[in-house]
Image 1 (cartoon, helix red, strand yellow):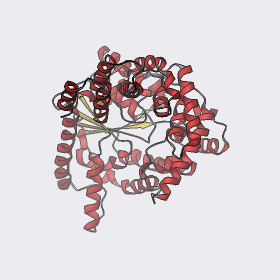
Image 2 (image 1 turned 60 degrees about the vertical axis):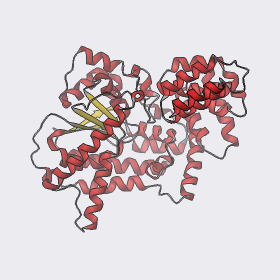
Image 3 (image 1 turned 180 degrees about the horizontal axis):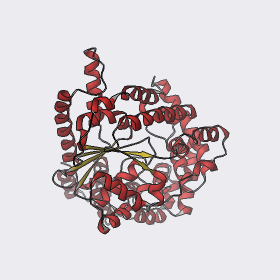
Image 4 (image 1 turned 90 degrees about the vertical axis):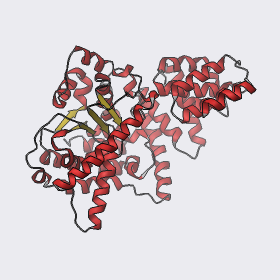
Length: 455
């Protein structure tokens, strides 16, 4: 529909605004490569003096950044850095330009964001500045900016009546329900993995692990991303049990068989939707192994084990809680109830303690044959060695081709929608490890020290 309307309008008037408007529609549909093509065509019909030029450049920057074409984005930002002075688009230009590797351009963009943030009622500018200050190595200024953003975000959420500690409470209840699941599961017979769950507290390396596995086995492993299929099935089952006044965390064998059919169908449908979207890097056909990555699916690990038994593998990403806490504090997650814990020191502390209690139950209740913990620090320091252990656990072949693809995971042309998208577009680095020790702010530093000893 967009293409037909676009071509028709171009026949009527070949104007830059037509290209800009059409590219905006493509960006909204997440067709970033097509948007880039349209915008580059638009550059040929107008000059820098055209009133639509600034918007064209900002749209093109968004397109390049979303595709991971950071070298192209950096060149474009350098050529058009005058847009930082634009009253209409300076903020939007800075939000993208702050992420380029050129420290001069990035630094100028960050300072612009900080100045805008002071006059803004929102929190997005503070979070963007914190994110890029961290990337520039200025952790303490990043903490200061994040503090401002967190206070504003939490105040708005509380005015809406959202619960700050909903997720820690949910994880605590999940830990309680998990007790005794091993007796329900009985002796699990191992079979080739058909469904793999990548789980872990946010900022623990789940996106990194997903990206490496997807790069190493293109076509044979289907990466579903953050699908809510399992969460919806588990919470739906729990609600049904509550209506019957029959509390149960995992279904009996017969019910599990019926639920499994529904879940498998939903997973295949989720894959088909991805595969039909070429700009997401989907492959034709359903792979033998589907991989989901929703960090808080860790609360449904016992449910998944009951459904899939020997056909499931659970990869649990583990990272130093101090680094997790700092990264979460700086991130500026979406302001929804499930993530409000990340906007305060108290919320992060409660989340980490609840999450750790759940982890201890998982270790006790799930068979080692289907449950494996992936250490983040090992993953970033010895990538191929760490991944070889993971793929052995999954039953996948490991050879020089897979190793090379894994090492070059950051070159894959695959859209990443999570908070870790910048990290997985560059070569592996252990730079974030231990960064929490640099924090000087006493309130935040006290939190980081308090969770450092939890294992």
